[in-house]
Image: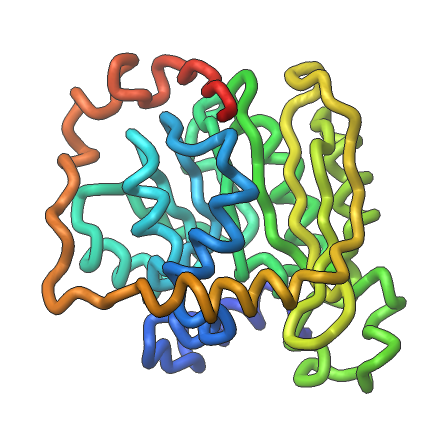
Length: 284
């Protein structure tokens, strides 16, 4: 077992990690997951949400799942941790479908069925073997005009570790050292996808440690690929913490449950299930 491979990830997230705050501790810089969602994630996905069908890879304890459920008609979450999947099933009930996988395979979900494939703050720990396998399958899972939004490591850009940091899993926040924006871009093209945008950002004070990659199927979009270095990401985080976080409140009881996703009516063409692609949204 080596750092960032499947066995390492399973041992960490299924056994070793305490999940004492259900993953909220990783949103502390934003002041919580709500300001992080509305200040960082949703603005980058505003043209693609709400939507019909969403596949989330590595939902953990559901930090982003609650937002994705509210903005989709059919949701599937896939995680290699039985503990995480059990928690999500208990937390969200039948509002979504939750599947344990082997940390590599998406064969448990149908091809050509998803408007959005999403993963944030999870695949940063996945090594090149895992990322490449996921990219190949994700292209197949997308519907026409569907997109994937993946938050992944950019540590490979620095030949294993950022220049301003000493090498080692603690110094680089357990990012995969063999994954970068460039390698993911190459895999997307190799497997029939098309890059829409890649944004390399600072993370935890380390310059360009992470990357957000948005891609679709080849031929679905008439937009030149954008590859950017965002050196002001820390300002965005600070804005969320100071402006949005004070207006975020934790409920003492769960919000009202959504409709049962196991109901066949939720999965027919009128409900945005695998039978029909949703219409593209107009941008505001």
